[in-house]
Image (cartoon, rainbow, N blue to C red; front, side, top):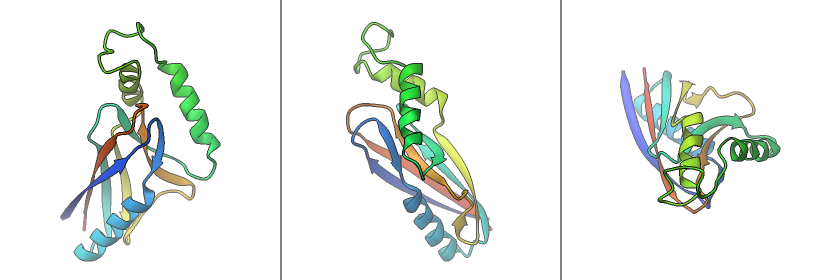
Length: 143
């Protein structure tokens, strides 16, 4: 079994969704070709506690708008709402949103391609308002 890792850095402009399906697909293609892999599993891991990863629809941007609205209702911002607010009023809500989503994903791989559905994309979900640099670890294992 072969293992290949890559670290991807994404620059965010604040809260929102940042699709990186293309970057992940390029890594899978290159790693599969160089290691002659026909079948495997891609694991993606976000190295942060105030951002998360999602596989979500990438055809209609209204999905992202509705998800942002939903999470703003579930974990609202505001001084005095949380004990942990030393980094600002958006810090604890960001941790809650991360806890409700996920920091890792697994995607099956065959013949150098991720086996995502037609309208599925891979997103970094930035929960903080300020710009950040987020690091995603991509790990492909397979035969």
